[in-house]
Image 1 (cartoon, rainbow, N blue to C red):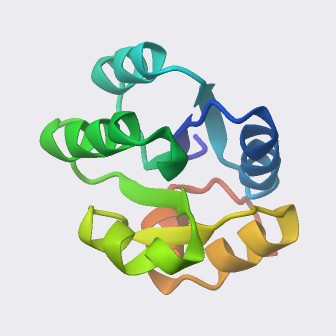
Image 2: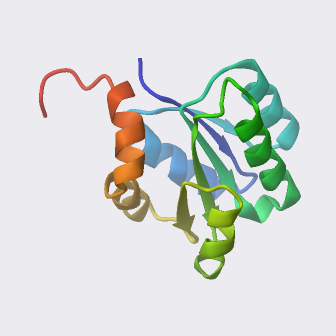
Length: 132
């Protein structure tokens, strides 16, 4: 089964680009554009990856904190999408990886594939079949 990811962003273009990039990496994506739907998903199933758009403010912070506190999602890899100048603060907020805005599919794929931490987290969960 492909790794399951939760994406929280109300920005339709950001969500579209991230969903496309994650699908190309063979990840299942559940995209939520409002906090209540994201919280419902987070509390009802386990995710391998939780992505939040930091432009969502306190809601993004709350979702990330909740994921870290839930036993079922404590080990989820946390990705925060935010402004490059805030990357240090985003890492302190609990991000395992920070993707800079504006997002572009090629940059997202490159950032994910070149992150040793991300690859070591999701690669064992990928169903890649024969050697590629």
